[in-house]
Amino acid sequence: MTATSSASVALIDYGSGNLRSAAKAVERAAQEAGRHGLAVTVTADPGAIARADRIILPGVGAFADCMGGLLAVDGLKDALEEAVIRRGQPFLGICVGMQLMAREGREHGVHPGLGWIDAVVERLVPADPALKIPHMGWNELVLDQADHPLLAGIEAGSHVYFVHSYGLKVGDPALLKAHADYAGSIPALVGRDNLAGTQFHPEKSQATGLKLIANFLAWTP
Image (cartoon, rainbow, N blue to C red; front, side, top):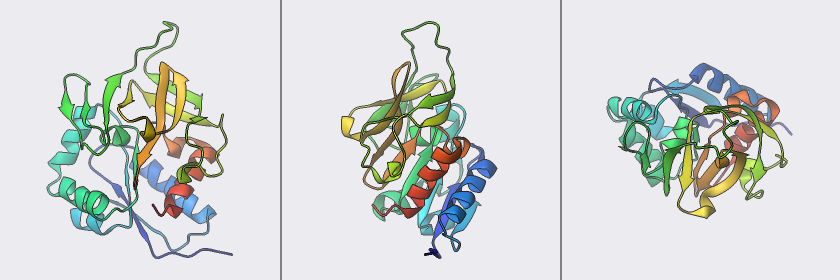
């Protein structure tokens, strides 16, 4: 049966992230899942974000720069708090967008994050000097909570694409849904309640990434 939906997905435009690539991936995942009525919008409008049914926050670059860009858009942080924290709309952070959910980022100083999850962002320090930083390329997913809805239909060992030098250090192990092994254990998918974040780029992770996005579009936490 073909699914239809009048729901809306807002990809937040705050000067960070490959928004065109992410939007195309969401549109393709929605089409393949039969969600032909889904409205996918790239926007910095706080009103549109506050009204959105689902929110995606991409991010590339330094933590402080991304947080600064978010705060520079008047009303954006308040709109996010309204939609995600108070109304409980499904939220997906990608790469630095995931990291911004943490209490603080420790890249070139200590910088406050959104404080939505019990985690800090620290530089990756590989035990093996042969491992290069940034961690760039394909890596296997290890599923810590395979029953999480965003992992439905995704097998352990599936390959996803990473580009980062910093990663989350979670204070609550329950946040960890999947990880990758590189510079030790790197949180790859974290979440609680209606919040989820991927350190990898689903829009660059081919079939596995599209499946995760499709799962997010169907997610009703």
